[in-house]
Length: 198
Image 1 (cartoon, helix red, strand yellow):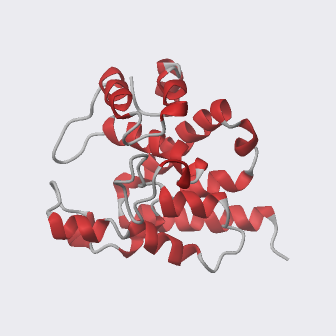
Image 2: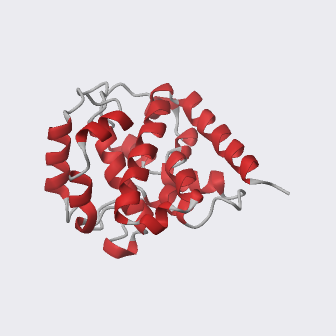
């Protein structure tokens, strides 16, 4: 009978597989998981108590295993076709974890819906507002923050203050406004401890 230890080992093996596909993503997985757990503890403590939540946060990008190298490793912005391919990674992620019955509920919600937007303009399904699972709405803030404060081949990282300003401007469009304020209020020194931000 599988135990919690076996579940943890399985998740970490999948995380290692994602890291092998994209070395830069490894640190991102740990950082964004830490940020998302910190925010969840503030805005939805009951949700934070579910160990499956961490699995979803760590495995949110597992579908990138199925993205071609020419798209995944392109050293610059993606064109329309490449962007369409990249936007399949939540669906691919769901397919990868489908045989793992312990990755269900909130964990699968994060994998499937972390790129949905509050205004319905996200992907892969264009869900809107409260139709987006709570865990995915929370995670979207953490994911965006880490992406903005990380160097990319085509742009330098934003500062903490710049990233928070952009998040504030996107509340009610990209992000759920009901807990965006709680994210902005997180201690920048604590976020610096959780991430690479000085």
